[in-house]
Length: 473
Image (cartoon, rainbow, N blue to C red; front, side):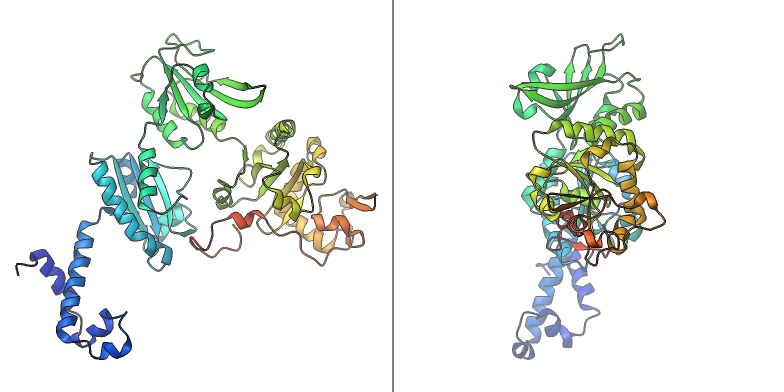
């Protein structure tokens, strides 16, 4: 009895009570060859089972990972500054591989940050908590999401699944999201601090009544915009007696190492959380985003088709025109389509898939995650309604239908205009790219399929996740 305490004895009894000793060798000797199992001695079986049960009991007793469900999730994420949650399924092999690493991380984090309510790791069993997992749009196991100050972060964790990587990620999340600086000019003179988009706060001190609200915004948007504060300075364009204001700056280009920024000053009340939050969000998370290999997986998981402008790296004018027309014509479609720009040199494979090259840039295409469709002429984006019709025809199925069956003869306005230039047939309506070189099938349809999606291949991998069954993203 001196080898185990009373709690361990309870685990021993619990383990052995329902089990037939006759079956012990078969249950605990899984790695033992069949012949040797037949001669598995009763005493050794008992000893092995005792040790196994004690270790299981100790493991359960020592777990620092919180079990989360619909009844306590709101309370837990509100209690801690940062909560890191593993959405998993017991039957998922990747979830089983992650479980011990997550346990180790939780123990390490507790040792590093013993302060009450600072950081916690939790887990949600999606088989038992299906409604909770559905509420957070879980489509694969394991999915790792993070809460900051009670708000779920926009981006889930997609880095390495090691204890060191998790600890570093959580350490970064616990840093103050607002960095004090001397001046905007001084900050932007340093290359690594010269961000594409940034929010600058001009506050008298961190004791102002709206400081906590701004901290919450900065924590939520830290992946999209860095927040800097210049204490004791008067912000530009402010009429407030205190001089406090919020400024958004966006880098729009550079000439001979001279960097040009657009500057926007918040004119609303600083103590109105909703107003200020929406103003900052609209600028830090733009309507048109750039797709990269780093964020492609995340963008595919949003489940919306891509409308992509492929452009040359130095062609900023086409990008600005595209952004302007999207804002003017397609603002109402932002919840049904992802508006993106892509460096045509980095994403040369999708261009080849479309039968295009750098010489054809700029060009616009839709990737529906099943097929790709080409907008006929980039210059037509300024013709009001054409790009909108292109998107509507995707949602209605017309783009795919026209490819296979041709145009509806009752839609005279929709008949394709076919022009032959230098032996190449050019289509004047938005038809999948294979139709370009198939004039005889243009009016009657095409037996082939449109180009398959290129960006679907950048979605979450089955070598890393167990994906739930879905026909389309």
